[in-house]
Length: 482
Image 1 (tube, one colour):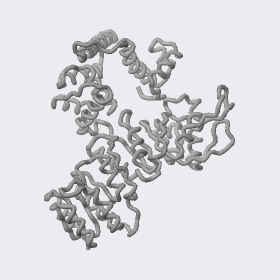
Image 2 (spheres, one colour):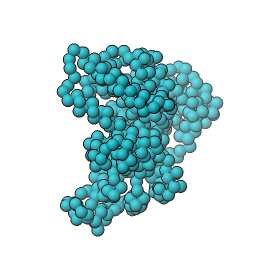
Image 3 (tube, helix red, strand yellow):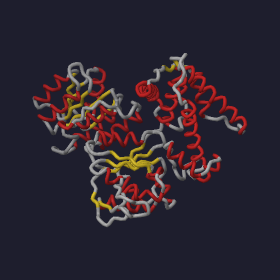
Image 4 (cartoon, helix red, strand yellow):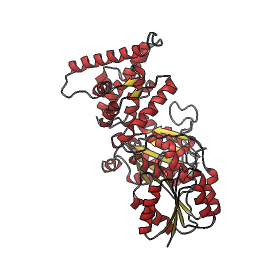
């Protein structure tokens, strides 16, 4: 019979855990303080520890390194109601076997205990406690069950070099997750290099990734290192990997197999030591069936698949995300912090969020910049969301009239937000740029990334459109759905 030591200042949690673990055939000793837990562990008692993070006399996370130093083989399971990525990462880094966000499922606790006790003595668990990173940054926001599963997966991956494939809709935060894997991982002191496959002309992708030598092609006047060379020792993030041309896929597969490559026009093999994190919003299996993506490359990249939930699957995170984005707008742009009425927040929870977290962020920044009132009501939210989703069946004339009214309304709010003062100079260029970017992006989306068709739709010369895409930093995704 195994002895389980449980530490939690909540008597109810101690009771239910004791009952569930006793039914599973274990002996349970429980306490409400970290000091008692430490005494038991120091005396050599217990085969496994389950501890809360916040206790009256000490933080449970701070206790883990001390336990691991005197009893390195003792398995530790951490529970927490804080439920942030930082909590999950710290628990794993300090040597915890598992992290369980509260509220938890008792069957899951019993299964975790069974797995922990079945491991042989001396099996590696977690990272060296002396290597813990204390930086209090929270790159990902949300405490929903969907995000908790993401945090737990990330925490397990931090101190590995496993290749990760992130799949999620546009706007779910795929690059943020890739950065978190790097910033909290063992390659954190190396470079993080991100490259978007959809934003690079097809004929330049190989040069962009692998670099080129002087004279490799017309205009190659000097040697230019590629993204692989720039990321050596760190992490290379390949965003929108589904848009990579087949010929570049072949070269990428070779790099993943052999850890070396040659630059365009080069003869010397260049060895590389880095971690690959890839991401896509597309169904790669469907692309494989269509002959557009190599199946062998898919299996090389899809070592650890990680799905990011869309915002509509984690609506309970919306209030926290709103507070975060308002604070960001206040800090970076000096905009006033706003408060949303409860009815306004509930209305946002019912929205489908096709643009996910990025759409919510843009809405929050708009509210901060364009509305003078401190408390935003549901009427404002209704107006904003109705403008974002056109009514079906409207003709071009009605749409144009509605767009004109919407622009005027926003500009009036913008002027009102400055009170008696005037907005900063350069208003025409600023507003034109803000209107132009989504207009061009939507036309490219409607034409599935075809710049010739998009230029015709806009009434622009193709060269003019390409310059605007570059100047406005618009990502072009070929074959995107309209």
